[in-house]
Length: 258
Length: 305
Image 1 (cartoon, rainbow over the protein chains, first blue to last red):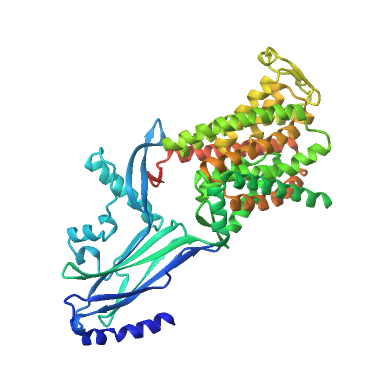
Image 2 (spheres, each protein chain N blue to C red):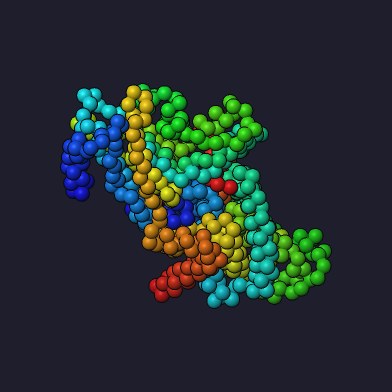
């Protein structure tokens, strides 16, 4: 309901822009999220994030052709070691490893058309549009071919876990003005500070962009348990042992009574 | 049906976890083993990170050993002195095991190592059990009973210095032997997430020569303390104990064990031992198969570190 109201409000936005004294040359973006804070609680099974908003054209001149929009949701980056299994004496063991310094814990991009059709490699690399354009910063010292191989392996694992995703038709644009995209965050998403970035692309150039923060954190019982395990690990361990002993003891009392 | 596990950081179907605990509990009630050697591989197979599976399995065994140990305690079948020596060794072993565990984790070889150790131990012990069970079944069919097994410990254990009396175990041996046994089992408890009863019980019977009446009770007594120590070590160093996971497993395990004990009373002990041997060998072969077949994903990720 709230979303609908906002959309109606946004429909009026081009009219406002028209009346402004100094119309800017580039369009602007107004954007909103279904949730700016995602709580991971006991029943968390992943979440669908709705990113939506409107494009403000300078002078209110709505173009005839549909605009191109790319929406990126990304999680906090952290170092990841990628290991490759090889066959040693008939058994598959980890042999080589390459460390990547900044791998987003989650990365999803939704676009109006396949990314390769929107912009060239340089623009894609600058704005990190598309899984293949991420700057993962592999450790130096490996050969170019090896880095490429491990990067492909990393992306494949992340994709399978639903932590890297590309949706080439995920952004719907209505009346050349309103845009919206639904992005799936699986239950395995890491906690931390996320961001949603919206890019308006015209003729291969990014002409407008907007960024919104999203916070994903464990809440309630899950948060309490997690913090206990991290900060009071000895107490947590003792509590775990005591809980196990108590439930074992209760079980033996119950069964003896029968 | 889904529940988010705060330490494993994934959502699981809680009914599946309880049924998994129940199934393992059924087998452990039936065969009189802890079942950790089944819980850990099954959890890993379900998708729980190996470090969390091993640590939480140890916590679950602490709980599931309590009722058994209490029952033996009330019948006076726990040798406290022997148990104390085994626990002392077990705690030392758990500390050593933790060092090995952390080292393997830093090398990135923890998953493969856990699997290889499982294959070796389950393979050897399963084969020994199968041989023994088949022998017992054949002996039961032949009309003339074989010579009774002489109880006693192996010669080199008798040669160890500082002999002392363990009254309930009916032993006069050096405490160094059970201490060393405790160390070995303690290392395995931390690395494999098992109680080690299936190693401890035969070793107590055939290596130390303990009297059979106090073996199981003393083993359970030792398991409670050593798995407890393993839980503490995992909780403080790798922070991989998932208390929610452990309690779910316990709920299923406790119920399953009761059913298992009742089912066991309808079967002959020889057939039970044969079935357990086949089960242990089956798990070993399944894990060996997993090690030799090309994995679906040759790449694995390790965050941070």
